[in-house]
Image (cartoon, rainbow, N blue to C red; front, side, top):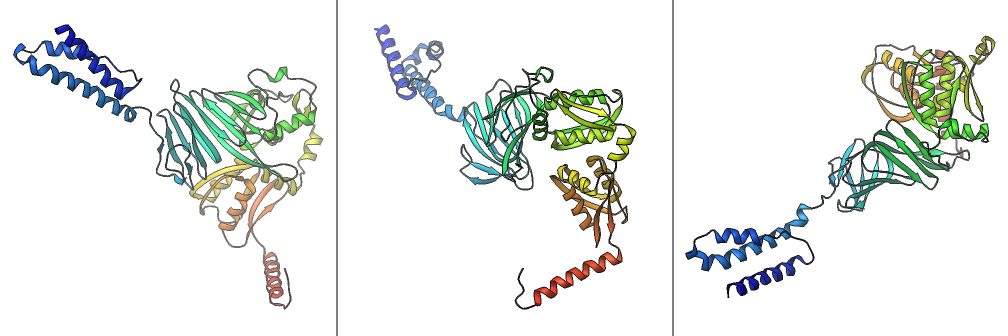
Length: 438
């Protein structure tokens, strides 16, 4: 009789659990529950038995309702984000304005969106993904917990455990048509960068700009020395123009700099200048070709591009003197190409000019009071834009005067000011004339 009761009791528990849990696997607690009941006094067995069985069933059933709450975490959106659309879950679009904001996904992905950035939350559990509409993000992904992808119009970056930076860049081609490129810099681990143009693998310390019609080369599989020699010098130049890099060297040997640039660009770069020479060079977010020209200028060489790569050839004294006579238009063009980021808070003008000289490679001076305090914040803009803004904010009638080898922020002369006033007066008079059109 007892065995039959036990069987019916077990069947009852199984039916109730199946009704609630379906196909979910749950722990078998019946043995522990019955062992606990058996240890009680016999006189209480009659009423304890059904109550305890029912309680164990309800305990297990209640735990099942808690499973969703204890399972996969939803997106954690930082306060500095603006919710553009959605309810804060997958499919929501988030944006930042003038400050960074943090997003956590799946409990293992941390995404820090930079200023003026827009992203959309995508992906699924353990395969998190964001779509970068514009701007840039810094990402940290814990290894062994799931995948993570940053998708953009220009390509995607996929990882399983690393730290990296992604920026979406807008560029113009020769026809002034806008196109987007993807800049990726790996701080730890490794990433796969892929798109319609192909695929790259980047490891810690490496960075790459891709997209815009570039044909990809796997830089891990193809070393610069092993590249085909059938490519034309024009193709090498085009590749260097598209590849954007940032460098910071303080009294570094030329040999080490050339090896580093070869690794960054995938193009073999050599020189016949004294290899142990110490060089200081600081450039941010510019084409590799421009960076090589700056390096060549510093070490007194010229950039010779051939089928095998780039050779920085030492110039003769006559050629050095000739090259020093670059036109002011050349200096302006280089400053327009050089993109920099600055953040000065009540900094003296002297220190700012010294820092800009270091960032641009062009000597920059001023004739206005040098100890004046200036606040200035720009991110990824041309050096010329920074200089024009600085000139307009350090005093009235200050202009950017560019010559063959330097830039001077100086006050207009009396005759220049009279000429400026006359031009402004003529414009005002023309506006007053009837029938005048502009």
